[in-house]
Image 1 (cartoon, rainbow, N blue to C red):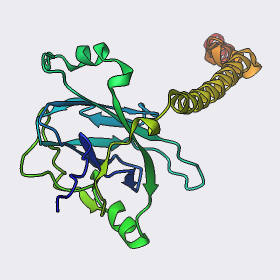
Image 2 (tube, rainbow, N blue to C red):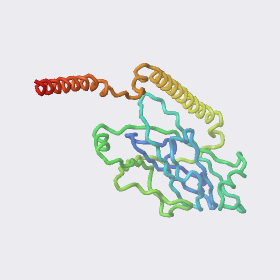
Image 3 (cartoon, rainbow, N blue to C red):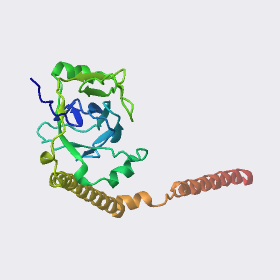
Image 4 (cartoon, rainbow, N blue to C red):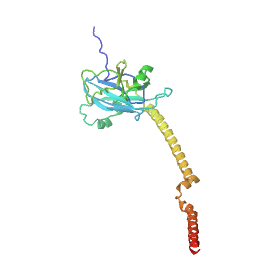
Length: 272
């Protein structure tokens, strides 16, 4: 009895659905994404995020040889963590099988020439977690180490197009059990409307922050203007006028009077 071969997607991603970042978040936090090419052809990938200023992705574009794996290092920049704040950050992994005659030396040029219908998309959401109290106290006692969270080890085939990132010697590695998921079908693609909405939220926050900074700047300018026009400032800026000479004038006249009296007494005794 023959069994039907199970369909395997060209690209598998680990972790499949969520990128977990374990705090504390007052220092960079790194998590690892593993990509595997399940085909005999070279696969090209590109990674996008709804919050590009908050993350550093290395590499954000690359190629994977046949049946090889590669790792992507995603670094979350330090920020003030608030558990009540709803996190809307998302990542999207786009991939495509490279055409046989494609020039793989310039992946950015190749990516611009591709049609949107050729791309396979998979989306992952970001999850922020704080470690237990004991672990948090232990992490705070460290000397600014980078926290690294991983999703699995690289297969024996190695990586192509990028070097697998190594965790720092002083960093703490937090592993999580995950399963490999296939790339989502075209019906589950991340729409441009979702990205536009997330980017609009980021832009709205930046505009609000810019408005607050402008108000604070105007307030400071108003305070400087008032200080410069105040009487106290004018007295400080007036040139110094010494009064020592005025205080010495009466003493000078007293000395002359004493000298005149002394000479008068001498002259009186001489004539007498």
